[in-house]
Image (tube, rainbow, N blue to C red):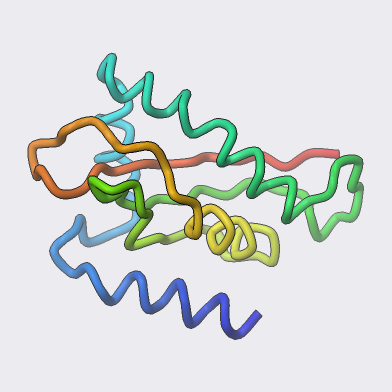
Length: 128
């Protein structure tokens, strides 16, 4: 668990030029997802999201520690690597998801105005 916090903290420190606060980052990612290309890209992330969640919350799990909602934001590089990952609230499941999803090599994102990274948001609600 301590290693998860270190990895997430390291990713956050590495990219100070990105949107400064969590809410701004969520809004930025939602704006990108509102485009036709963004919606298609979000759909392509489904298998990666599913694999990360399955690793963190086994199917049929009813343990209250595994339930609840969280939001993850990050930036996908042109090569498909997820950077500057942040998740709120931080729980055992959200931290696990951030670590697993953050290690995924994602599809190449659409071009952005920044040209180097593409903002993504994943909003999860874990229910039994």
